[in-house]
Image (cartoon, rainbow, N blue to C red; front, top):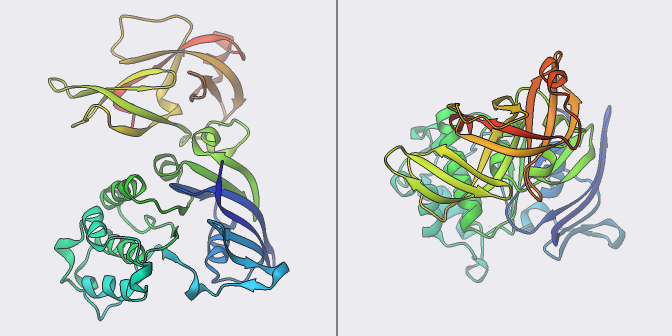
Length: 358
């Protein structure tokens, strides 16, 4: 992995200390994930320079901090955009005014993000003349993200931007963030404690616990590692990078392929060639020793048991290999695991309802 973001940062408060050494890719969204008080926001603020940590920070080859050489670029001189849980827009300015304020702070020769492209990606054109008090929560967050982008940042920092939104608005903003990933070559660090956001949005994840890095790597890998908390409980899931190979309009079923096979899933529309990330919840995967034909379940995949671990009382989590690099999880009862005599290396069939795939 070519690292565009390298951070060795340490700081201490009474009762808490942060000491991290992270390397993140130079494109797409990377997650800082962990429970409350794990150090996610402290780490993000240290990267922004809003909290003075000790250490070294390099963004795309440009040093923003190196204490050994006496270098510390103040926050206002760092080419970054930051979005918080609350939009924090200027109340006395319209949406256009908020966006123009951010754009004017960047010299014309350094503006790398097209203003009209940001309007289109975030659907902001209909909102330009409104004041912040006339925006919904989701609209305000879209404007806040737009304001961060028109400042042409080299790095985008997002601190739980969906946390204050209801489910419909959260889904809308999630779709906008996915578009940003595919169309703008700006690396982003995304703070979250929601596994579904991490699975759907990010390609790389850093798991923080008590101010330390417990694990760091591709999101799809960390989601299914049985030694990590992401792979346990009712929210455990796998993220699959798929491509639409066919779309059947008469029953609105998309056929998608991935390393390990193909899946059928309901979809309002899906153009062949489209790439997506689909989430498969562990609770929606059942296992059999042989393939059944007389079933309403659309997806039956031949898989291999890679590992079995204790989960919640009466349940186990089973890690499954589906191809060269793709893994799934199945959360089943201990009684079922014992009846099937599950063990590493055992070939089984994974049954996944099409309606259960997000």
